[in-house]
Image (cartoon, rainbow over all chains, first blue to last red; front, side):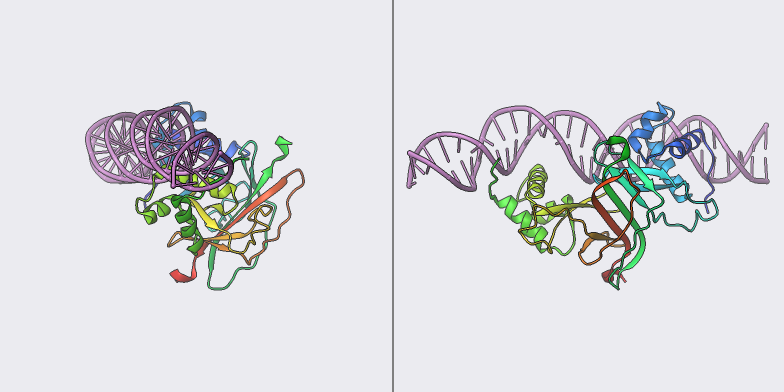
Length: 129
Length: 129
DNA sequence: AAAATAACGCAACATTGTTGCAAATACAAA
DNA sequence: TTTGTATTTGCAACAATGTTGCGTTATTTT
């Protein structure tokens, strides 16, 4: 398989995402990087980080794609886990937060083969009340 | 309040969505309409249908916005319900289906004021196995 | 230090969604 | 049926987001 390299762009982007309490959009990452690299490079780095299981993708209720690290996952289980936790999408500040602790339970009709779940709650986050 | 009118575009778009077993994207609606109306008109009609509670918006796991009618909702409760049911997003055919019957249960940390939930499961749908 | 190849920047393009404005039309009232 | 008017539409223009190809740069291996 193809081997990946550590570059300034990758290091900085991963640091940003790891240090952020909320999921970040491409646009937010770009403005935080302050011209360190090209727009396209950010897309490609994010893609790489996802396949390396350093980062996962979340979509907020408006369809905006955001990226978040998975703080609760140990490096050992990174390659097997499917990010099956819930997210909270704030209607006011539009921030997306991972909620590691809530565990939804559900029953699905048979014939459906479930691989992943995306459980996003929306409303008002603690900061916005 | 502003009064809405029935037009050919609105009628056709609603018919499409109502007759589809899966949620439809703007692009899918556009190609199904076969040039009946402008791209922009479709956006505006969909907006209207949502505020009239004829249709609701779902986002699939890739962030693609889709539109679906809510078959299980009686016309009386349309104005109060929040479409709090689950969706299934197929990895293969990318179709999004409403799953009226599954009722997820969960517990949220306090401080979070939950208004709506978007519960999307992904995997392989019955048609793709 | 050199070779191999992964990653980058740039330009160009595709898709998706939004806005302003003038023209068309739906519909209620005359 | 005709008329008046507010709603809806089409068009053009734009903004935001995402993708692809290709020549150049930079990291890693030998």
